[in-house]
Length: 136
Image (tube, rainbow, N blue to C red):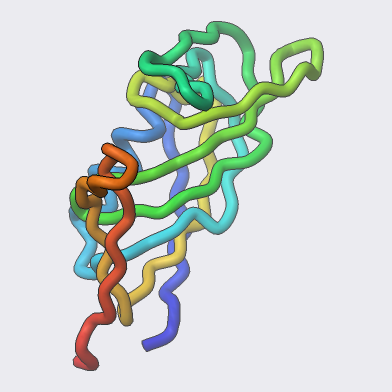
C-alpha cells in the first residue's frame, strides 16, 4: 500500500486547520501527513508550548513550514510563520488561522495505517494512536 500524494490549494479566507480536518474526513484513507506547505495567512492562531490558550497574530504572514499528522477525528499541526519584517514565530496551529492569498499543500495519505486521536492518561492530551490497516 504505497503512499498516495495529493496536492491541494486553499483559497483566501479559508481556515487552514479546519479545511485540512474537513478534507481528511472526506478521504477513504484513515491516516495522512503534511509533506509540504507554502502560502500566507492574514490571521494566525498559535498555541505556544505550555500555554493553555491560543495567541492571535494579525498581519501579512508567510507560511514557512507546516508539519503534522491528519486523521478523520482531528489533526496535530505545527506551523512556522514569518511577519513582514521576516521575524519568525511558530507553534501549534489552531482553528481561526485564515489564508491570506493562498495555501499550497502537498498531503500524503497512508493507506496501510489508521491514525486516531485518543486521550493519553500520561499527558492528559488527545495523542496519536497508530494502528496498521489490514491489506485490502
